[in-house]
Image 1: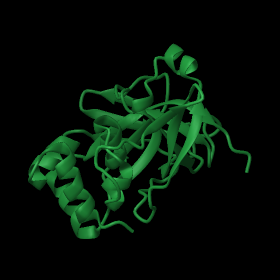
Image 2: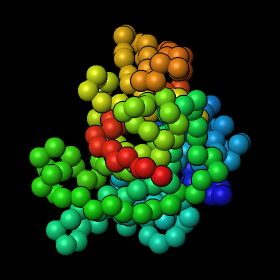
Image 3: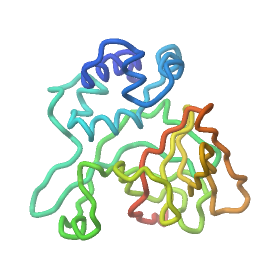
Amino acid sequence: MHSSSIVLDRLQKALGVSTDTELASELGVKRATLGAWRSRNSTPYAECINIAERKKISLDWLLAGEGEMGVSTALSISDDLVHITEYDVCLSAGGGSYPLEHALAVGERPFDPVWLNKKGLKPTDLALVRVQGDSMEPLLKDKDIIMVDSSRVIPNDASPFAVRVEESLYIKIIQKRKNILTLNSINKAYEPIIINLEEDDCQIIGAVVWHAHSWV
């Protein structure tokens, strides 16, 4: 497991800040949340993914201190295909889970750049992760691979969204009314999750713009 404090120190360097208060502000989380990450040795993988993509930072450097900071592993282009990174992070379609014990494994899947362009998708905004659980069935099933676009964070009825609530990651349909977010499941066996944006530590990570179903 990566030391969360060392990873957070690297995040400070990547974002050009020197204190945890400044880092929390840059990440859009409460100062207490960042302190909890350090005390519990909890690496904030979702934030690492977003910063690596946004700042073109190497995940190998950010998580393990390997290589150079400015070498991006977010994507590569070869044979006229764009290769989008797949991360070993699961978004819960059930009761909520945070990948505290998962190393962030990097793989790639090729996509046609013409298709991406027609859909208005920029490779640097995209990440592939897995669904865990059954709350979004029949639309999304356990082990499905989804593409999350981190540039799309305004709730709408067109697609599910990846959301972080405290130290849990979810994939849900989002409704927003004033300062209240309602996270809805498609599977009616699951109750909505109500989030007060003035009180709860919550971040919309991005919209689901593509998915692939696994039969095993």
